[in-house]
Length: 207
Ligand SMILES: [Zn+2]
Image 1 (cartoon, rainbow, N blue to C red):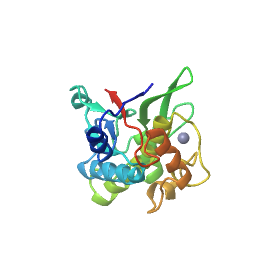
Image 2 (cartoon, rainbow, N blue to C red):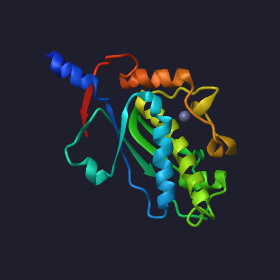
Image 3 (spheres, rainbow, N blue to C red):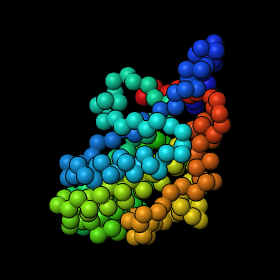
Image 4 (spheres, rainbow, N blue to C red):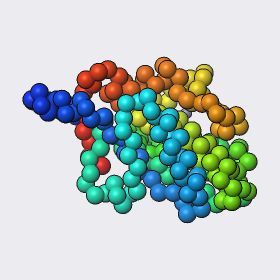
């Protein structure tokens, strides 16, 4: 459980209010994900989380182990890497991404299936060579990540009829120009992050 910090002095309170809560996204890209795809992934993820009131910090697993503190932490990993032109290794229920649940508890671990995303976006053959194709892959992966991050951060399996919390994505959702959290979903995310109101309570959690 998260612990509330008691703000003892006005000075401390004001400095915390000026500082947004931090959300560390801990991940390592497979070598086969191109720099252009990585950049687009980070930019699109941050764009999706723009209204959540948190500062997104990117960390590798090695960096995250250096006793740095964050308000919230989610670990993302790629299932079976992201090699281009590889046939998607489909599980029993093919899913573009998933959030781990143990004993009914939603855990802060997200897994992305790059091969399925490549298949659904037509980027399996081209992402390593074409910047436009790499951006398409990075953007699509980020949308899947944003969907799963919502589950991880709200500890909820709830879906919406519209926006990024739809239960499934089609090609347009992954590759189109418009897809984001609905106002209701963003509000629920902000409540979970403690950023729903001015002067929201600050939370602390060490990785
Ligand atoms: Zn979902």
